[in-house]
Image 1 (cartoon, rainbow, N blue to C red):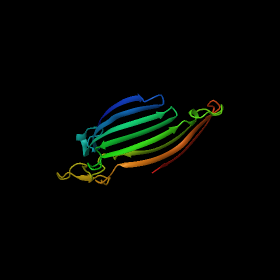
Image 2: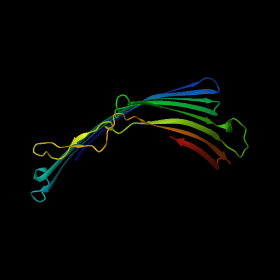
Image 3: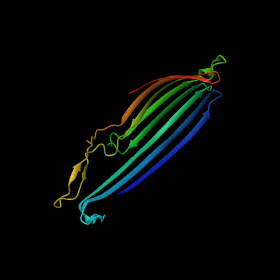
Image 4: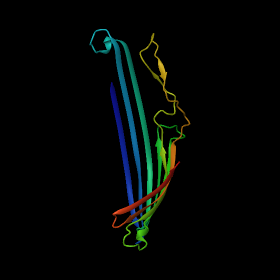
Amino acid sequence: YRNSFRQINSNLMITLNHDWNNKIKTTLRVGHDLLDRSRTQIAATGSELVVYNLFTLGNAKVQNVGQYDEKYRIIGAYGELTTSYNNYLFLTLTGRNDWTSSLEEQNRSFFYPSASLSYIFSDMFKLPSWMNESKFRVSLAQIGKDANPYSTSIVYIPTGAPINDVIRFTRNNAAGDPSLKPELTTAFEVGTDLNFLNNRLGLNFTWYRSI
């Protein structure tokens, strides 16, 4: 057996900060991700040895040779904008677009955004001394996912040794679908974090729904 695996990752991110005044601050991040992967597997096996304990392929009556090659690439570009007001109200907006090699050309580009809001009301109102930093949060996010390589095609692979000089092909178990689209999941979340008694006691509540 021989396995060869190569994976290249590239990441670039640029961050920009700007304070508009004493209360409003913004942070902008833009960047890209790249993942490029290739894999090759070659296997040669033999059985029914002619000479006992001579472990060579030439000594096997039955020989099987197989090879598998896989190439996959996904490129992503993303941005994130965070705005804060007086250090107690925070709004974050994100967006990402991916281009994948595992889907057909008309479906290989997909975009998924998100938005989240955090409100630290303990910094806005004067609370009792026994209550510490507490906040309310809400978010709406979408997550995208592509498919495994070669999921859009019906693949036939050579199998076993030739019979009467005829090479045999076997159909892959996966039923390829050229209209396969990215999987998009949307999640909504709302919750609160409450802390008491110098952070010795805390209460966290979260409600979410994913579709």
